[in-house]
Length: 168
Image 1 (cartoon, rainbow, N blue to C red):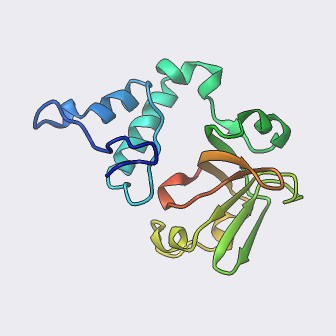
Image 2 (image 1 turned 90 degrees about the vertical axis):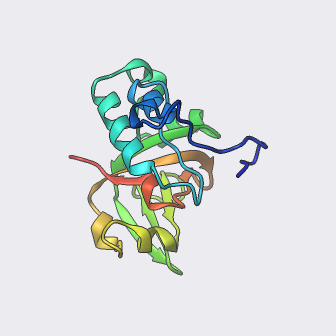
């Protein structure tokens, strides 16, 4: 498959050995953040585990401020990161179900605060098979994706792998 820039999408192995999986090595060493395109999430659970280890150990990129997890409670700060891929974390202050989409709002005013809409397939494909408003509201949630501007910072969550319930 090709991405929107015409690049070939593939997993690269140097040999028939898990240790020679290039993407895994890059993420584990802290040289890459995990991101998946729709329909290309087969290895994401393993990559997320490797990323968590690298972030916890503050390896490579994770030791630099440019790659830190962003605070959803600071929407004005997030404006600087518009059109960039970021990982954003905060307390889900409100969750609304609008025509099958769950809108996770990280502040009291959805018109200015960070919003992360979850497509219907995200609910269905979540680990428990049926993500509900009550699963998210009041919880610390981490989302990853491209920050857009729609009444405030907005990260479209089109796959369950892009959303995590974070430790408090």
